[in-house]
Length: 544
Image (cartoon, rainbow, N blue to C red; front, side, top):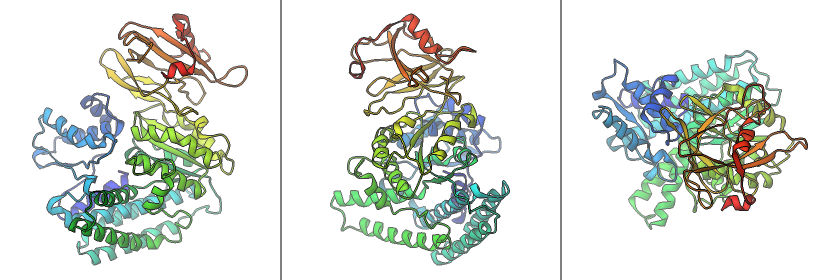
């Protein structure tokens, strides 16, 4: 969740009489504990959430017998569905059997909260909706503030007001709705009193991707704020979008199973109507501010995705991301950024589709960012920060030419591998796993041959070390050879030339992929060239 959503959601629990608080802010201890209690095969949000929960439990003041951890789950291809079972395993294995896990599911639109379902679901829904509205106001005003920090201060005051109203107002539906509406009015007025330069028009950058990474500023290293510093305005897909999607999936499954005329379907229909009314009432104060920035109905997003990824054949965030990209382009976005965890299936599927979407929409730049830990900081976003805002009103080459991967941290090593979608739609991915005393192990997944050309702001291949006992298919012997393709950024003709090598190595032998100090950034390719034989065959052979 985003910072504001977590605070508001905790207030929703307190509104029904349950003591609740967000996990402490994520920090280096979060990563340390997350790495300790995960194997490295899990995606980054799993590492962060496990780290945050274990950091909470290690506090001397925490009584495990009085702790319940809220960890929803979901169906579909995302590993999010395994977070709660894995967390249960970690807790049991480390002496925290008394800690409970509250885990509602997307299967029934998160209704499985037992006796809490009645009073909490509506209060929680309203809390998340209001938090999304305030977050949207923050992103609308912050790029244009005259004095740095004023917008953040107005946002914090409005968030405090919201949480106070949630906790102090009776949960009687009508009374609560009116109190929250008044809170939203006060929040809107705080933002309106800010000194801003709204006469200027910054290029609009749409932000889609995996829910946790795109909304959690710790996980994405505050990428949105970095874009704003480069002169862009961000439109971030909100959390409520996922709730509307789970509702729509609930209806679709009821229809598929012939249960549209049941009490369950009637309850789902009533809940949808009530939530729509809540959304209308709470968003009404922002009608003027959100003109031109209206969030689409979930079925509009699904229809935008249909030519590329029909909902009947795919499930989860990949459908929402593809549809939202199309919608944002139609609303005037100058570029799109997809934020996902490293090796995220939803991100990988979307990355393969984005080149076609970019071509269909006039060449709008779409860039994928994968996160798996700390890199060299905001400096690594330099290219994106300058490139996407500069694209405002000028849509050129297809998005695959703009793909860029962020540096990935594994253990104590920095892995600088980028695996962009190819123009022909084939690519390869590597899962990085930390091995004590041995650095990082790379395990190749997916078809094709990877093009390892991770670059820093100076357009040099980034430093990294990797053990590459890759279990290849076909002509490369498992555990004995590692096939890698490097693209050198700058050649005499100005185009990147591909260097294809298959480096022989014993099982577990380290291959040094680190550029040496003072060299022009092609050391990795040269080193492999000196000790490797050329790969027979062209790209088609590599794809087998």
